[in-house]
Length: 239
Image (cartoon, rainbow, N blue to C red; front, side, top):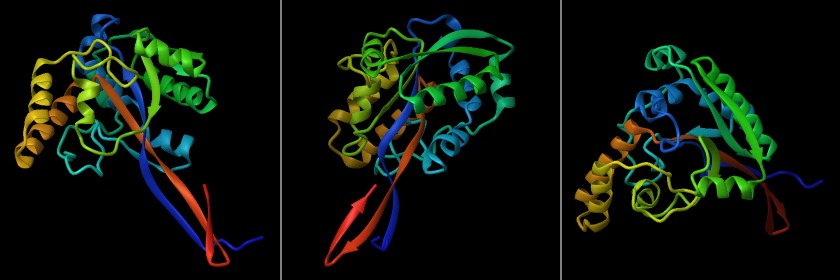
């Protein structure tokens, strides 16, 4: 048995989201206070503990990752609070379906979210299909709630435009049915802005709007653990 010489843990740009579709649901979900209630009601720290054994970090409700130089830390946050969630729900009750793949961890995540949301009057039915069918349904807007996991969150912060701009090309990451003129204007302005400081101000504003509107709730990012061991002068890396 070769001795372990180094143990590293670090976050990478893979994120897990629960999508909140606002086009094909009743008016209750179109109310952003209900979406905020959902954000407060889901115990994301508990999801990390139970699904990732504690190896994860809460994602920003403004979508842009903390490692990005355009990240805005001063946006609305949603710490776990059933009390706050109930206040925002105002005794409303909602029945809906959450769409997930047939991956066992995703199914477990959906079941945990179901338990959390039941506490505030949102009753979910978990619908599990193969990943390809789930992705096609999301692309076509055939879902109410959906769990998705994807990366490609590095690079220029303009990636946020492809997700939230109402006229962006439809795809699995694009939020179906969401339109906010103020956000559209800000996202297009940052695309054309050449001054870095002014562009940062625009992207900060975009994150403020996104965190307040919450058409999609980012849950958490996973940490990846790598173990290094020496083999002569070389090293071997295991995940």
